[in-house]
Image (cartoon, rainbow, N blue to C red; front, side):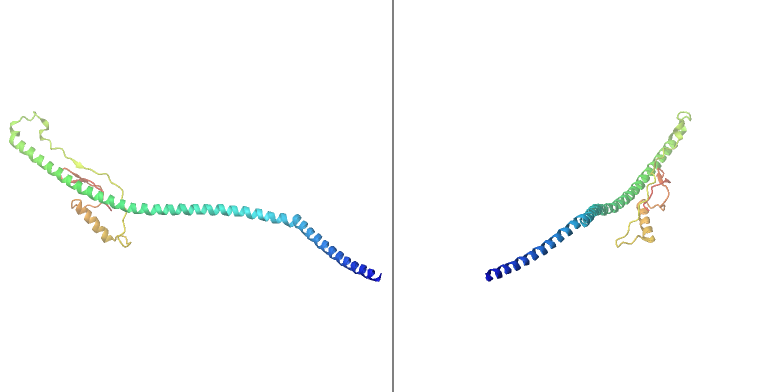
Length: 214
């Protein structure tokens, strides 16, 4: 009988120990759920609000970064095209200068030919008059004493070409500019004129202008 009592007492102690452990676990679990409930009621909404704010700001940053990337691509494309256009511009300035110089040469040649034809016509008319004028009535042709028509080459003044830099990146000096201007003048017929309006009539006289490259 005593053995049964001792066994019951031992079992009672074990049950009490388990009961205390269960009570402690229940208390801890209840405390955890209470904290979770408190977190869900107070802190979780604040956290979710912060998350939504962060996502909104992140979206704005992504849009801004995307816009900046687009602008960067546009700048790269623009300056690439600018580089090619600038090289073409230098070639265009040289081409226009060469055309202007060639035009000046042609103007000089045409003016000289017109002047030569004019002088030939003057001499031919004078020879005719010397030979036949004494035998022709004055009222037969009133325009017989008129001089021949005089033709001139006329050019409108164009824009000023920009100065180009020499190889090495230095702008042409005043002496270099003057040498270039002198060379152009010589190529255009040896005239000492380098500015103003100028043209050449059939008698070889300058009365209007070809605008030289400056």
